[in-house]
Length: 262
Image 1 (cartoon, one colour):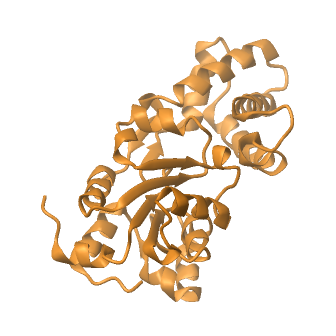
Image 2: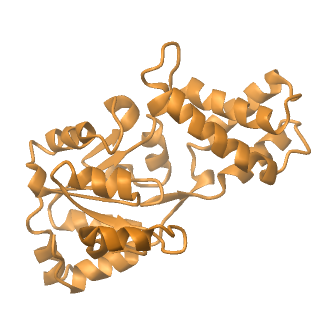
């Protein structure tokens, strides 16, 4: 589909456009269901998704606080051991009597399966959106709070060849919204100025404000029924209200048909 003149004008000021990944371009299908299914295949029965979900949320938050950025700065921990520990803690929270050896096997299998297309799906419009941006001749990249297996995930989903660079927070040593990760993207984009860069993501704090506080422009994609605080945020942050869309498809339509005030 040919580019519209309005789409080209809206992106004219930018030399670099970057995307977040999770819940922006790709979405996990049902991660906690996958936990329960993998455990059952390893012989752990009687543990339900309903039991695991609050345990996962609790321990993901705890691990993210005590071993930030997937353990990148924690002694004797790498991203693989970080995920292993999270899996074990999640199941132990649901049932303290589960055998540790079996849980290690579950963790190893989950580590593998979550890097395949079995656990991910493309968000509607993601492929065409990225391709249209590429067709304008921009440098196109990824900035994601993710571990190094991001490359495997993008490859499994047929996305790895669509970007000029891919930055994961673990290797970068810094996470969004820290301006350091946005600065790294500017350097990879051949020393683009902040005002010449646009970031697209789904988190108000991590993506939208992180980019804007780093001197970038940004667009926010948030499904209205999933982010109730959005309406309050729109009242408080007028730029965010102008730049928020309920889906990538709506964002693309706006870029193609309306003048965007950056």
